Amino acid sequence: MQKKQYLYTGIGYLVVGLWVLFTFVLIGWVFFASLSTSSEIFSDHMFKFQSGLHFENYIKAWTTQKVSVFFMNSLLYTVVSCTAIVLISAPAAYTLSRFRFPGSGLIQNMFAAALGIPVIMIIMPLFGMVSTLRLTNNRWVLMFLYTGMNVPFAVFFLLAFFKNLSFTYEEAAAIDGCSPIRTFWKIIFPLVQPGIITVTIFNFITIWNEYFMSLIFANKANVRPVAVGLYSMIQSMRYTGDWGGMFASVVIVFLPTFILYILLSEKIIRGVTAGAIKG
Figure (cartoon, rainbow, N blue to C red):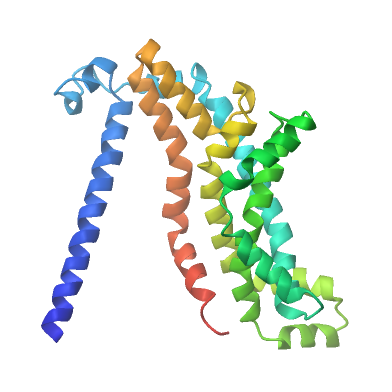
C-alpha cells in the first residue's frame, strides 16, 4: 500500500515537473527572443546573441508600438476596478454573512448563479445599451463593466471568511460604543485581510488579461488595454517584421502579473486555505 502511495506521488511530481519545465522553456524562449533581432529569431543561433543583447527592443516597443499607452490603460482599469470590487463586495459579503433579513438567502443564491453566466450571453445586450447611450470607447464604462462582472465572485469568495469570524468581535465593539459601520471598517475588515488580498490578486490577473469585453467596448487605440493592444501589434508584425519588438512587448505585458504572483504566492495560498478553516 505504501509503495503504491510512493508511486502515485512520484508520478504526480513527474507530471508537475514536466509542466514546470515546459512553461520555463516557453517563457525563456520569449525572453531571449525579446533581446534578439528578427533575423536571429528565425535562425538556429538565436541563443548565441552574435549581435549582442538588443535592449532597444524594449525602448522601441514602449515608445513606437504604443505599449506605454496600452500598459497605462490596463493599469488604470485594473487598479480602479479592483478597488471598486473590494469596496462593494466586502460590505455586501459581510452583511449577507452576519445579518438575516427577508431575501438574504435569495441574494446569496443570485450571486452564486451569476458565477455561472458566460460573458458571451450578455455581451450583446450590454453592447446594445452602451451603443444606444453612445458610451463606447469610454474608459469609465469599461471599468464599470469590469467591476460588475467580478463582484459576484468576490462576494461569494469573501462570504466564507466573514462566516468564519466569531461574533464576539461585534459584541465587544458594541459594548465600547462602536457603530456597525465603524465596527466593520475598523475591526472586521482588517481581520479578513488574507481574503481581501487573495480576491484582489485574482481580479487583478483576470482584468489585466481580459480580452473579449475590451475588444468589443474599447476598439480605439487610445483606450485599448494590453490584451487587445498586443493582438493589434501581432497583426501589424506581418507588415513591419519587427519580431524582436513584438516579443519585448509580450514580456512587458506579462511581467506585472508574473511579478505579482511570485511576490504574493504565499498570501494567495494562505488566503485560499484560510476561508476553509474555522476561526
